[in-house]
Image (tube, rainbow, N blue to C red; front, side, top):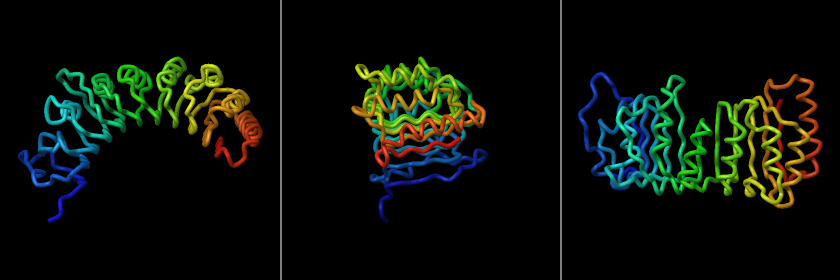
Length: 277
């Protein structure tokens, strides 16, 4: 029998759960594990935390102590982690440094208790994190500041973004190359943020080349085009994708779309541009 390298667990019944089992003792090459609809998966199965590099959960409850700590007081060696949270931990969590974790995705069910994500994020130090996908930009800023994480990819989805928090986040992530702010409100990417991105002497995120924006975008289209022009000589974009929703009336949105497209058409095939209204 060949040793598996990746495994996915089907739903396990919460009514008659099996006793904890050591099914992975003979799987020394197992590096990836995904659990779906398993209540406290780490209480049912003895997971090989010492060898897992990728861990994904989409289930009812999660013992976050195990995710943070791995097999014990020694931090896990997980490189990629994707968590869909529902409940937080009732016990206090220690602050843990996951020194190898480079990719983290945190999502939640619509009815998730608000402190679950906050509880996890505020107790993790992730000095190697380069890719982060989550929803609360204030928590992102706090974690980046504490961890000094060298983020290169950031995706924030669904929610209000505060312009001062966003500027603070951009200042704290000088290596950021791919920024995706989707389904956001009007208070995030403002004219003030565009001005901050335009400053040549102290340019924020000088490596930024991919920008995805969607939602009720409230900035001036001509000011956005100006920002792209001012950055082009030293920090050119490769891809810009924008989707304007209901912030403006249809006529004005068509005008803004035309303004940006005509102004940026000078870059031709060097810039992949998509604007949808």
